[in-house]
Length: 151
Image 1 (tube, rainbow, N blue to C red):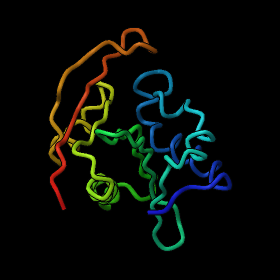
Image 2: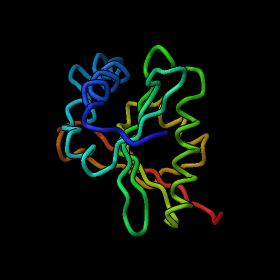
Image 3: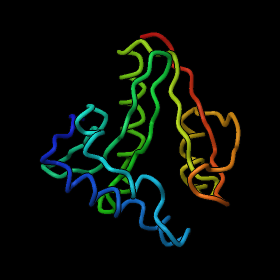
């Protein structure tokens, strides 16, 4: 994993759009990560890229807080899905959380993203609640958390 640079911005946007396309089709409009402005996130050091054989296979958008890390988005290029890249990025994030001495990882996702919820649950995240999405009327947000043990 490496930090994205401004030069990576087109790749970040393209990968995010492609990875979330099935949900854009399902919802009839793009999920919030697709409409995000990634330039400020890259400048803040929040966008991390996973590469294999010279190609960007996935990305994680991670907000670092004093008491937790927030996974804003995790996306795997459709060309590389099913090869373990998503789980590898979750493991990487857990290692980073330990390195940064943060006791918890958090994320939120759309209730209709059932495949993602199942992946997060299998990785040890637990659902902590559901709430209306403040930016998308009619959508439901699922909040999830995972405690991080010491190194």
